[in-house]
Image (cartoon, rainbow, N blue to C red; front, side):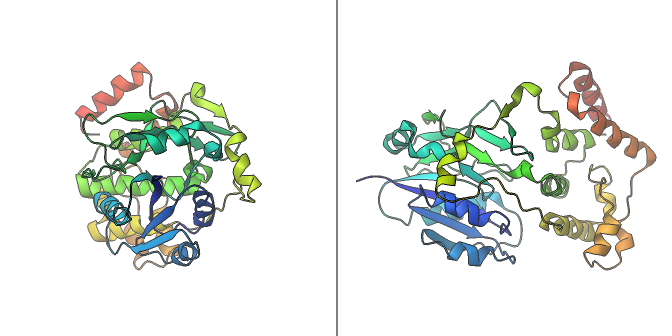
Length: 332
């Protein structure tokens, strides 16, 4: 019996791209499991309008990657028969050449327990270029029932058992739309930094800035021209792959302000998120006492954050790395 291919996707207010994602994914997945964490932007209605979608509620009030991944995997395992799990976010899509690539059959016939690794194609906002990390990410798993042990944040989305074989996909890739809306990406990455400070106690401006602004330090050699073949088969199916919806307000701005309201702004004085005037943002988003969200940084801290921004494009240079390590020693 042919293995079923099941896509696992967490959702929270993804209406900006969800319809495109589901149109693309419906071409290759037997089932698409959507775990929706309290969306209020029409994502639920969009998801339920697609025949292949299995819609489940993720009622968690807080961000929790391991739990949502287990929810998705457990739901997939309720489906009978052998299966391949492919975990994609709503702002991702397989390249359209899956229809013609022999790699697809290789995935369907790989031994159970095989981790399927894809290149991650980060599309630039000009939709002409992209940047590609050197390593391949574990987006797929030929399911053998292995337990999934996720991390608090930036966790592998599928089981990656110790010593498991890997299938490296070279022709089929994962398109990532995060960078196509710079404001959305920046909003999300500010929230990541706030989460790291509030939940993991990370208070180093240097560590946070370098990690969450890595896209501004991409080497020119890693910038590639987009291959139109990645889109062709989708466009033949009347799927618009290149238009981008840019919102005026992003949910992560609300969540950053909620964390400030909960903990106070002083907790986040070292976190390099102050390129936004949060008192103005709070006023625009109808938060009470918006003056409580004013920038708490010292002049020195502002200067440090400015230097981090200035030096980010050359952050890989030895001199900058040495300076960074020295700054970390002083807990800056």
